[in-house]
Image (cartoon, rainbow, N blue to C red; front, top):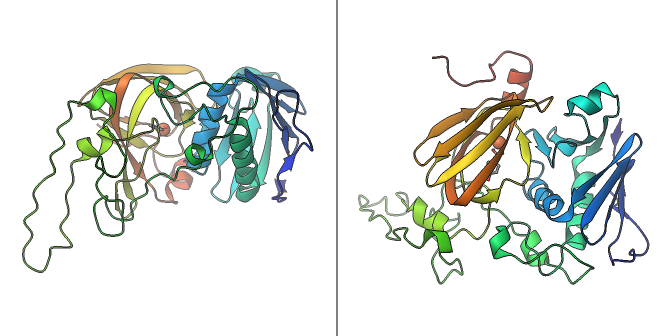
Length: 328
Ligand code: PHB
Ligand code: FE
């Protein structure tokens, strides 16, 4: 059954800690000083509020992303591009075997509006869910203002390429993006472009390392170039990817600087499949039947390369395309 109601259902009054409670279908959400409590007809769950808000922030900003966004081993969403499943225990072997897993399908606007409202109400002015833990205040405590400018940041999605007229322009001190403390050694010089007469507005180049050194967010891929369905989505990473991503397609990772540890698990059961340490210069393809979470000890630069074709998930799900990209 698809739930089509787009109204956000929130409690009439805030609780003792100052936060509203929300319902979406049969799911209920409430927070106190430290934790988020989620209930559904067959169970309930508790998450630390900082981890919950970091995951919620990605799910909202990426409009439910590719495939599955696991907030942790129990709770998450599945994007069907028009509708979204919200689930508990569905990709957890123990919940499945105990028949305690639960899932509802909602029209995307309904879940989007509910999640946006929860994020806005539960984020205090001290907390930025996109920032590294070192660069933000705490998520804890009783209700204390809001941080709407941070939680409504729009991610960069270039139509052609950063630097091309109409897309985001190169970042500088003047644009308000400062070089991150971990990237002070990154060369800031821009390439010199010498275009043939008549092509001055067409030939563009930019220094991707300099661009990324000024990123003020973590674990938030932006689209810096688009060639048909081929999207280059680099990002700067520090601490832990706030979601466990179960993709519906293959994605490539190019480690541009520093290191990331990846936990790779079976997408459906959560059983561990491998641990990967990617060092600067390493390239890997994450298969389409796994889920993964990354750990970046120092701020690092990662290029995520996505195939944005809407045909890919069905080709893989139906077995017409393999879950891996290359036959060696
Ligand atoms: C991913 O799930 O592939 C992913 C998400 C966010 C990032 C990097 C990778 O910043
Ligand atoms: Fe992924």
